[in-house]
Image (cartoon, helix red, strand yellow):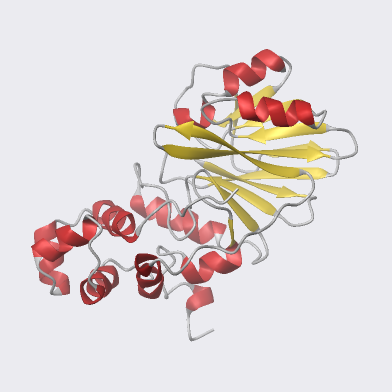
Length: 282
């Protein structure tokens, strides 16, 4: 399935400006771009000189912003690999991603997020003859947990895990924290905190597949990150933490295409040139 990149350059500039709490008037003074041009950029009107100046002032990865604005980048297809699958469901006019990982020997599976509609996930699990042992949620936004009820109805014994720092959801959950581990046959899943989009957002690193996979929720999108509803600085730190994983790690976001640590180190707009892997001093 070919998914469009979640954020356009206008979304990226808007998230950075809002996250830093900078008014359009102040931003214009700092970057030398008129207020009207800044508003035009946030509406998606691309002027290269203006976009470059705005992105630079906001501390973004300027080259990545310009490439995304010109539409000449999307992450390379990571391909399919045994024991892991993407499942999409509709969320208004968009798509939301959920994932299934399974032990091919035992046929036991775990879902990371549940989407808005469990039907496609149930069809995938039943089609492969898999039994669902657990549902692990990256965060407590309804587009990521609405499918839990139907999944639990089909597999009543499936445990549901959610960070204890997140708001309650209308399903019974087990509270987890940094260092959470879940073993499933040859699979090992480890959770670590990646807040910013929400206060208790978590990323789950899955080992035991042909490649390591980190399901990141809305902490990171291909080229971007989720809106920093709670803390912009925490969101940036979460991006940095995710990108400190090994470069071959596949990143599975809550929206948009899968990507890799290697690509995001170069092309994530919130991974600025000052970060270690982009610095000319290293």
